Image (cartoon, rainbow over all chains, first blue to last red; front, side, top):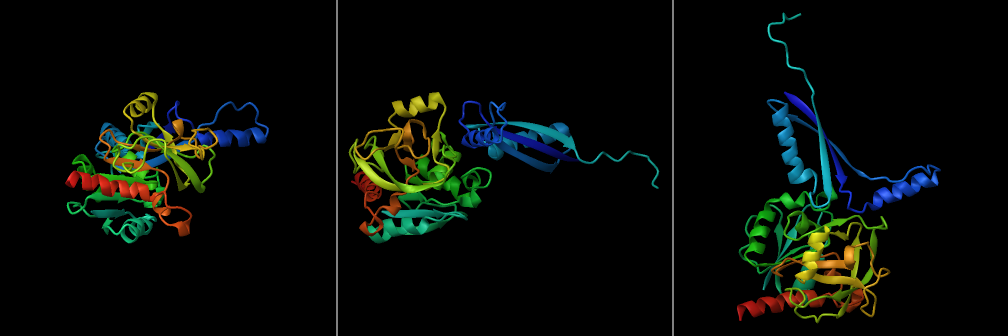
Length: 94
Length: 233
């Protein structure tokens, strides 16, 4: 099975985010005065092969802990979806 | 003393380091390829500045898994002297050889300028030749040197005397104006608990000749030479 994992890496709430603050300033300059906070992060899409969803998730969690996110400053969230549905057994070929 | 200078794809200060340690201080040096796995012949290992692996993902994140880093970790754990400068500092933190992380500069600007550093302690292998409170003038050149550690870690490194350099004014006062990047407590360089691994954002190798504007960086490399001589004695 092929899975697609979307990995959202964000700075921990206690970590100052100069990029987010600068973007917030830009939004205020455009007149979006209602914006009270902006946090910038990273979005990664990882496509991988795995036997099932549990295995895919645990692999992506492991790779995120090891490399994709730095636990000193970042949190992460993973959303997983199968890319291809399994082929139904016994279905006649067209 | 034999110094190894690690070269990752994207490292750019390797020759400056070799020039400072080899040409100016007359020590034996060799470049160490990022694929090498043995550092047995070395007394000092330098991870120079640059943009290893294009700084992709996070500064130092990919370099940390280069084959040579396992050898660097063993070398450090055996007490070998390791100096990470700029990107090298970021790599040492990613490798968990030093605490904390380096965030984007608070100004969001790349800062390339001379700064003043107050030597906080002279116990580390790279500050033996300096005295606490001494001010060194050394340039910085980075976009992500904003030192961060969680409150417990920060408290621990302060208590253990692991803060080696702080950004300061010319007279040594640690002020907000002298902090070029937003680093917590003006931290510019730290050591591990043992004092044999030091990371610093400023570039001492670029302050070793009057022609380049100053020679205060020599103290960092000379300290390592003396630290090794002391061990050998």
